[in-house]
Length: 169
Image (cartoon, rainbow, N blue to C red; front, side, top):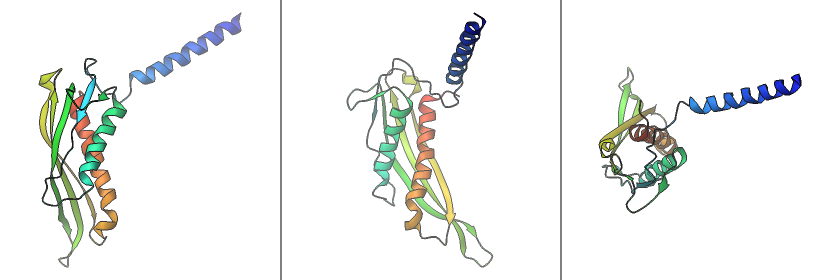
C-alpha cells in the first residue's frame, strides 16, 4: 500500500515538473488565439548591392520561424497577419584600421524594412527597419565567408522581427 502511494507521488511530481517547464519557457510567443493564418510576402532586395540569394534567405527564414514557433498556418490570401518588406541596405564598411593605415576588420550590415499588418489586432501592426551586422577579418576573402555572415545576421534580424510581432516583453 505504501509503495503505491510512493509511486503515485512520484508520478505526480514528474507531471508537475514537466508542466512547470512548459509554463516558464523563456522563448514563448504571445500569439492571440484568434490569429489563425499568416502571410509572408516576398522580401525583395532593393539595396544598391544585390546578393541574389538574400531575398529568398530572408523570406523563407521568416516563414520557417513563424511556422516553427507559432500555431499559425501559411496563407496567401486574406491572412490574419501579413508581413511585407524589402531589404534596403547591404553594406560593407571598414571598422578597424591598423597603425599602418590598413583595414583590420570590415563590417557587413543588412537592413530590412518590415511592415506588419495585423487584421485581428490592428494596433499591434507596425512598420520598422531592422538592422544588424557582423564584423569579419579584412584579410579573409568575403566570397568564402559571405554565406555564413548572411546567415548569422539574418537569423538575428528574423528573431527581432518575430519578437516585435509576437513576444510581449
